[in-house]
Image (cartoon, rainbow, N blue to C red):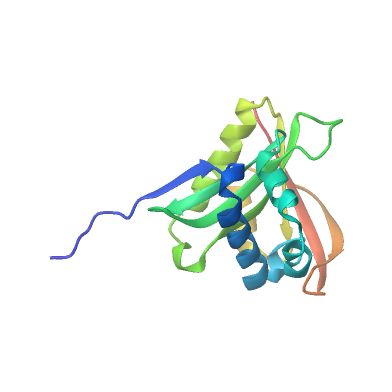
Length: 171
């Protein structure tokens, strides 16, 4: 008889002690899907250890790890990028390994960031994606994000394509 129980997934904020696993999955994401991110593998793989640790220790943001049992299989980040707009945060760096996609796990990533934002009195969330990234577009709209504008961009894979931006106002 086969086990029908769901395999457990969990999410938690990553801390500086998680730097090695965070760095590994971030670089994996940049290598496997270079067209989905604003930075390149070449750029981030050259970062010193202090840069990776600073990302996880940033008091103005949070990086969340998505776990399948005890293995890190996804990440996502939220960060206040403008000190003059402390009530606005940008959601970025979302990645889930392919074998775990299509299971509704992105909801865990969105909920973690939205909850963090509410706990930190953030009033507006901003998110963006490459114009042809239809999966991101659907997820953003599912969570109530509203299109705001686009900007032309040359991506790390050398393609020129618009970056679409959305916002979500929090109560």
